[in-house]
Image (tube, rainbow, N blue to C red; front, side, top):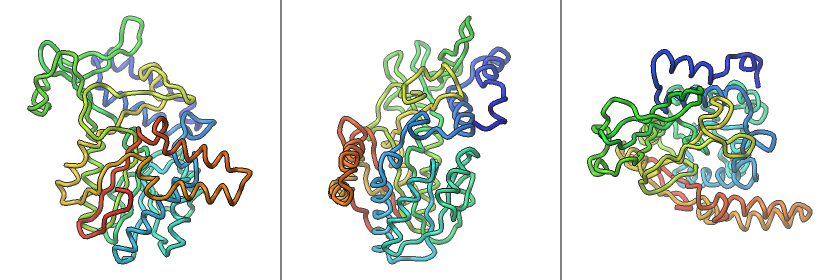
Length: 354
């Protein structure tokens, strides 16, 4: 945790004061502020942090992504200059592994990280010293194809929830009970116009969750792919069909905790609705390669053969290699819950695994 944040006023106190003065705040506001404080104050990854992501489980994950990018770039004609862009690159582990694997096939792109956390930038610099940093996509060069990766990025963007009440649809807000604890309450403003007509007549208590930030990111990335060429991989836990209900959750020290208990001290996430993102990408004229489970995608890319080769090369680590592989592709682990969505420029080839 950096010194400025260590001595900062707890976010819960700021929220309590704001709610007391102005009334309940939107869930989107609550989640956005909480995650901004959380990610800017610490390194949340790994055994010593709050959660472990796929690149930290095994080098195979990043390597296969690098090979996928190299393959699609080679078949598209090896256009230069080419840009590797990663959204929320964590510790830089995925980029380091992917770029090392891609380099063997002649792909040595310029590296761009979209990262707002000052706490993580120093760690990323050590892992990938040649990277350029950006606060958002707007400063990524507007020429040359982009090869974009976003692993567990969209799930941390703030969600908006709408709930069906006896009076109609309302936004889910966050207020305080008598003891100062944060609780969800229905807003006063009618929100029926924000609900797709086919889903408006739902039973009381139905919750619809949307993520304006994810929609905006995919819209911008799809436009870039159409204008500049390239391909993109969005990897996250989520669903391929529309569904109802809240998926908001919080993780601290590898355990699920109450999302409202300690804002800014736990990682708040929600499942990604990939079904909502596909039409957004297509609206720009972008090619949707498909959305498949992480397990299926990694199998198609040859993770089982790669694991066997690594185990044969270093027999003393064979058990750990196969355990990591199973964690990445197992149906009961990350294999089914996590999805991979591929996008590409209209004239670019289809990617393996979809």
